[in-house]
Length: 98
Image 1 (cartoon, helix red, strand yellow):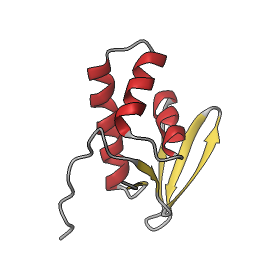
Image 2: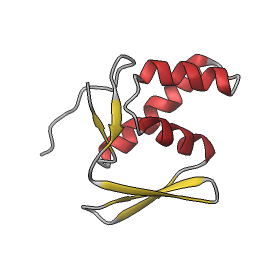
Image 3: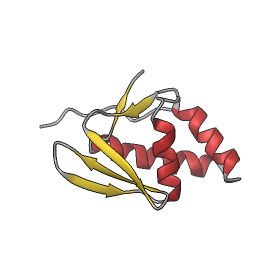
């Protein structure tokens, strides 16, 4: 049975895992989990989040920047970013770096 992971927190830093490869197709990112052979497609905002995760940003900083960039409610952006990141972590596409 897999270990239960703590929720992703705003002060955490996450980056791409070594278990994935990604590529851009028409401005959107397509990912593949190398261990499972599963493909994942991201929409425009999901692709932007993915690009930012390349450098292991603090999650809260990324949320604030996205809310400012897209002129959207920070609480809603936080909820959506954390939900996407939880899914990415479950599929071993990202890893915690601090």
